[in-house]
Image 1 (tube, rainbow, N blue to C red):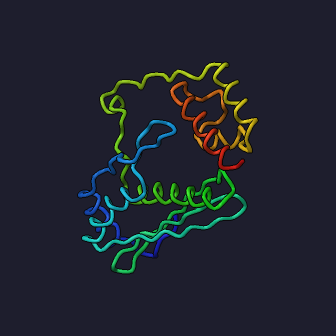
Image 2: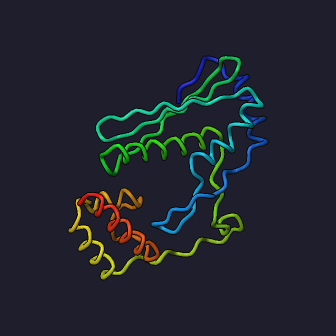
Image 3: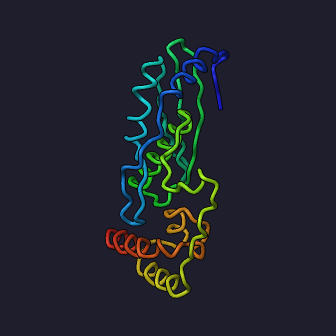
Amino acid sequence: MNKSEEINELATALAKAQGSITNATKSSANPFFKSKYADLAEVINTVKPVFSEHGLSVTQLPAYENGLVSVETVLMHSSGQWLSSTISSPVAKQDAQGVGSTITYCRRYGLAAVAGIAQEDDDGNSSVGKPPAKAVVATEKNLADIREKLAQTDISEVDLCQKVRIEKLADLELSRVKGCLDYITEAGAKVA
């Protein structure tokens, strides 16, 4: 994190703004994995009006180098005080769409972090002290089907794992198998 020499006025304004900001609603759907999330526009629409009321503004500066996207989020106050933080992520697919998608992802999470908000959580268990249910992982047959489909495309297993944010294919949840197969079919068709 970087900051101006003084941040007392910014900190006061941010504390007041955070008292009025609600979490971003998950209103966008990911058709491949049948999940919902708050997109960048929702996070901006949640934060911007409240920040404006308190003399706060945000700018986000993307950069791309060696397969890594970085977005610096700068929070500024009308007094001239500021602070900034940078989030970075590897790009799964090395093309304009992959870079753009990763920039959007980093912007969404960078803005939410600096504003102190979260996407509203579908999992109410954590708030009532119940541990979340353990996910059922894909079967060996499911993994073999995915690997066979991957072999017919330019998509690597590593690329797929980055796309679905898992460390290795064996960690894939059973509920996400169909979404992965659909993604491989659609993305592979674009490459062919």
